[in-house]
Image 1 (cartoon, one colour):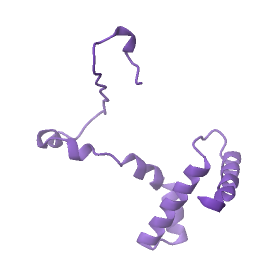
Image 2 (cartoon, one colour):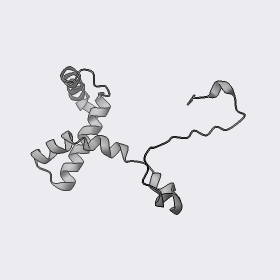
Image 3 (spheres, one colour):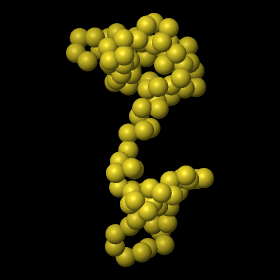
Image 4 (cartoon, one colour):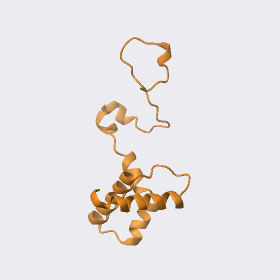
Length: 106
């Protein structure tokens, strides 16, 4: 971020003022969001209107959510049953089971 850190802090201040109740704004996050849209514009030659549409469509958030290795780790059998109705997270623990550990993620 370098010398432009003050610009990002100002942008964070304005975003927090204009969007109260929405969290996640920090100079680093604003930097990464800006970099994402700059790369998208360079890659696809997006116009201002297309860029506005991408922001409205939450393209940045969707790109972050899609960064998983889910498809690579599925067996062919599981891939065939991929039309899930719900996503279930399973936590595996190593070591002896202790009742106090139920629901803890640390």
